[in-house]
Length: 475
Image 1 (cartoon, rainbow, N blue to C red):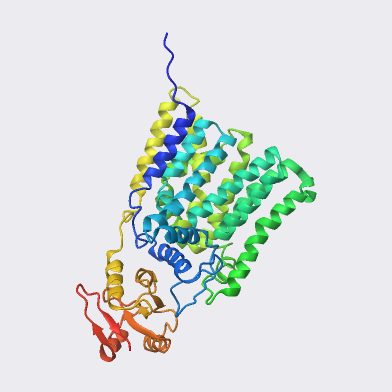
Image 2 (image 1 turned 180 degrees about the vertical axis):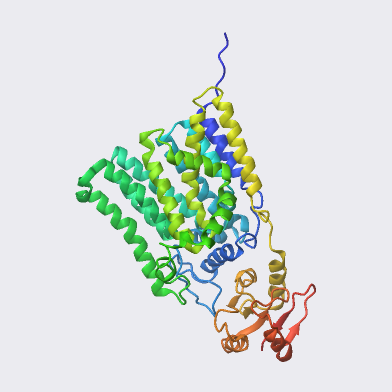
């Protein structure tokens, strides 16, 4: 009797990761001017300033507000600094910029695989990685020129390293967990919630002795102290406080009540299925509530912790891309539920059907604008680059800085300096050295009555550009 040839596990794992990476190759050459162009173009512009202005990781700059330097108080700029290194070596190519978050995401998928192997079976680990790889929120932001993918990498790496330390010991693992946690928090503060399952694992292992465990105190000092030092530094050098006080002024006062507002429920009911699909959310909920294995309690605590993050942080700021930090644990919990199916008769076939159904649902929920560039911004920017010099300060007629970034010029946005008086604001820009005013194909944000447009037409030369991409000379 012939023996069936089994596919080696390492080959299945390799093919799975290749497939996930390949899913992200389409549109890899896109400019930042697509989904979330504001945040993508800001990140890419910081990389360009590292190359052209100040090659220092601790001095990130924006193209606004006003002449350089425009040092900004933001998260730790690992992603744009790595992009800047690639730009220096190989030139300005957007696909290079997208390789950085893509590489971070694939690293996070590997950590997810290791976590799943620690708590579940190899088959469940494969399912978890596959689900993680096809979630709409993961597909969109794993190749976006933004810091989310890097934060996922360090966030998952921190959880895995801490788990290994709890199980096996070793100072190297707790130091790695501390450094990765610090980097995750420095990149995105909401990842601090991963500390809840870590605290649970420590309490379960050491009981009251955790209070005198010097390694845990070292972990806490590094994981929380390093981000605190970075944010204090960023605040001290910032030319304008882009996110200064966002937590104390906007999040903390509302985080206890935001979940109970109609606006929050409308946001979650609209965005959660778009990010994860209803089938996956249902399976993740089953995995969260079902106690199939006692050893996976840390995963379930992690799931509850990230639900708390959604209820307190995301409920306030309502940015869809902040949902991505729930993606790894949602994929794990859903995979746990699907993995249970394989233990029953015809279970593997049933599991395959369920995974295929989730894949179909995720495909349906993908943003229809995924991969589509904003051609109006790009065309207007080409006109600016053609008609102005690199050192010219410009004013864009938008609150969104995408047009300023696409033009590779420094200057101002309307509605941000003297928002209640557009004429006085324009004169303020001119006094600061503004040479050109650039509407977005004739559109000026906030100028509903046409007051600013009439002033521009009456006082300044209008340079006509085919297609309606005209600009005004201010001097």
